[in-house]
Length: 112
Image 1 (cartoon, rainbow, N blue to C red):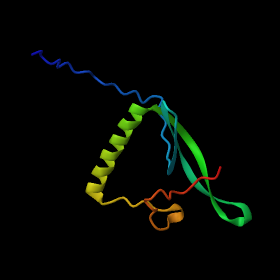
Image 2: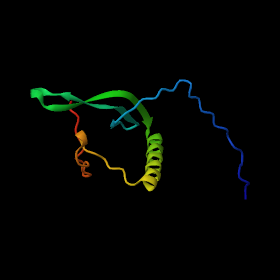
Image 3: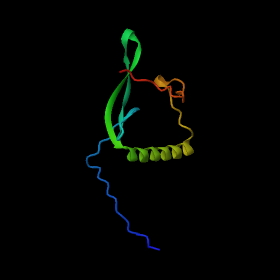
Image 4: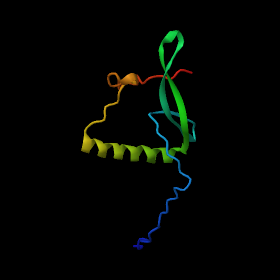
């Protein structure tokens, strides 16, 4: 039986070029090789015929491969579960602060 390698690798984190932004919405798209995450702000605007509308202002785009996207999904799931265990279920509100959004794929659609 081979002995396991017990060496430890030191991780250094360089935050010197980091920027922080706030996002209240995300748009996702994908290719065979990558996942594209657009983070931004939903901003209320006046649409045609004075109808209320939302403008999705993209602030950051993150492109990652599928294994990295899966690690992100697992990590987010863990941190959300921990938050909800301490603070209760996070309610997802419909646009405009109405009732919680339906969980059957009826997410708000962005205009093209």
